[in-house]
Image 1: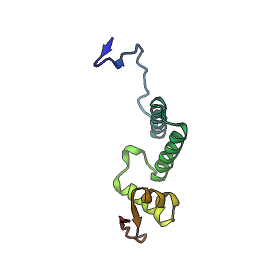
Image 2: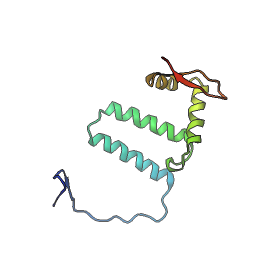
Image 3: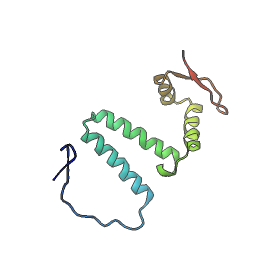
Length: 114
């Protein structure tokens, strides 16, 4: 059976019963695996996938809670901790965005380099 413009198709299969209670860590790990699989299917280079999946995993670990429970304050806390620790990853990311870090660990101030 063809759907829409012909690029999609229905694949025969069966419904797999899922347990009623799913471990959040396991579910999140499965989501990361699905993310990696989707990038692989779309043809991204394995080096890109490995790097980005590693960054995602480290960020999720640093946040300390499931991704669906993360708030803006959680992200600010982790990014602020990276900045205060002098993380080269943090500085490189800001430079790639054309930004500079000019704040203190208590009150971050991010501004444009230009």
